[in-house]
Image 1 (tube, rainbow, N blue to C red):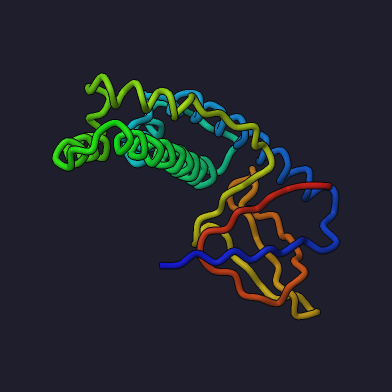
Image 2: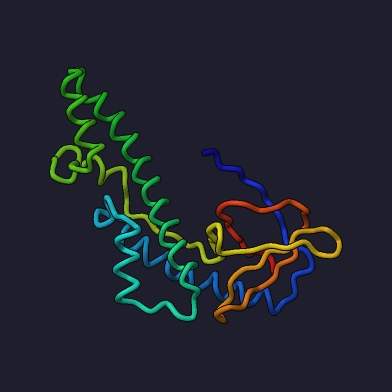
Length: 194
């Protein structure tokens, strides 16, 4: 399945709606920072968002955030951490190829690296720590919406309006867009410049 990146902007969004979305994005930004802090290092190797989500549902309260918002943020950040780790692994593979010309040894080291057993291997562990520093984020202006959480409708001018869950259960913030396109899939709402 391919990803499509379309950038749409809001049109005539009033300040009250923007402020509510901004407050939600700031709370999700704090959660993003926490997830990077907890899972952006060795503790996050092989982290499964479903297991973490199930544990957090039982042990934590994220009010006033909508449940789907924090769950999708958790998944999104853990995906970012996995990509960050994959990037470090590519650099370690290059180091393996520089270290040895023995094909069997290369294959063995690459297999250990890909199975996440590298933490127990002195050379691979050292190389991964060298290339995968503890990650962090400063993002506080995004809301990730999975498909089915948001809805949409056409305004009088034919442009699409996006309905985003708000802090109040059952109520949504309606955002007028500058396009007539029908939205599908996962969306990333980025708030900037008011």
